[in-house]
Length: 435
Image (cartoon, rainbow, N blue to C red; front, top):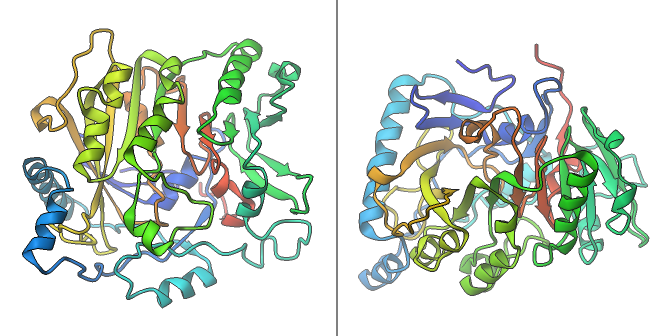
């Protein structure tokens, strides 16, 4: 059994196809290494104890309209059977909790309680400023990381292995700056915005900037390879694109004012393909993309002219994250039409000889794994570092990049205009080291 003090995995089947994971802990654990583990707690929302209110369409016409936008019925039938089996398997073999205790800020508790009856809202309470025990007495620091992220959104900040580098002076960087231990980064801005302190995990690197223009990012990768003798290409690239979301556009209820979404699928396609990520992929690179449950989104990735086809990537696994309550019940019925209780990560591997997969490729041609977890903040996915390492060519020496990231990961590269958001010091509470 995995020790909870150092792992986010609460239970896992022997064949590793079914996993119960604690989402806040998955992010916290990824901030450390085996030599310098992170036991601190990241701020979250209260764990969901009951299922969401029923918001299913009542008329047959409305149901038919929604069904036409979702995954095809055959594929969903396969998912439904797989998720049902996974739930039964966990209930028969796991007697422990479905989540770990959470660090919930008092204002977040109040907002969550106020919106409890909102069926459209899914753990969408924005995190407030830091707890009084952390930064409230520091007048030179910001009350939210968004103030700084917004202020520098039109520029970019690049950090190699925990050390900041001016994008225009990359040649000044040397291998002596490599950090094997956690560090802190204070961002000072020329505007009136106060300073902000962020936690930087060991050997992590990041590009804080707009993913629509990764020119400086590609230059940074080349500079890092030159000065640190690292590879320019990655063994793993993960993406969580800003898929269009009608309910978010309609209600404007995002996690915060800086969380943006694309207006159309064509915009997402142009954004992802314009990043030239294929230039950064090793020959057998694993590529993971989180998708929504719309058939058009799946087709955009797996279709004949889809993103995977353009990159020469073959679908090899599907990871289905089933969102549960604290009692292990799906947050909505698995067969719900309006809102599915799951999200899907498509995992592909680049091949020298590539054959495009059908967007409805059946389970006998891909490995399907189920991740069960109580939802965290709206749009915050489980950090998959612990689960994805077995797919790497070398578990202790691989190169990984996360695009559209919202937190850093030890030893990984991260890119996006919010990639350090949840590394803000105000979102963390130190805990005693667990032996």
